[in-house]
Image 1 (cartoon, rainbow, N blue to C red):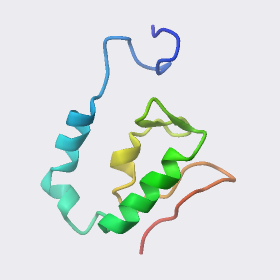
Image 2 (image 1 turned 90 degrees about the vertical axis):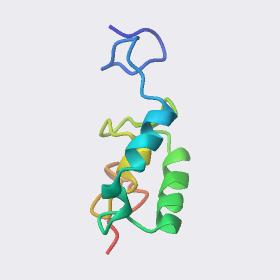
Image 3 (image 1 turned 30 degrees about the horizontal axis):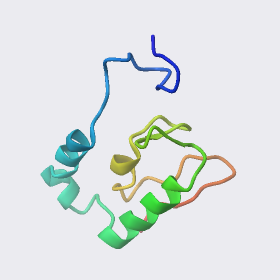
Image 4 (image 1 turned 45 degrees about the vertical axis):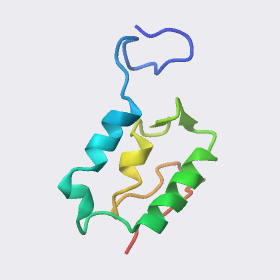
Length: 90
């Protein structure tokens, strides 16, 4: 299992790097109508980074998603109950 200051659901030898997330976000699906505009994306990332539920520089502690990926989707909203930081994008 994982050690101190690591994701409790992941093994110590498993990490998702920024390069891997960049590669995912470069996929054609993220350059389509399912994605929010860049300005909305940047606002969402700032809101998440200021949230106490943002962990390990990549992950939302509420839902376990990789924030940089989830924030790209138009149909996603912040999952933090009672303290949602961003809404679905029309």
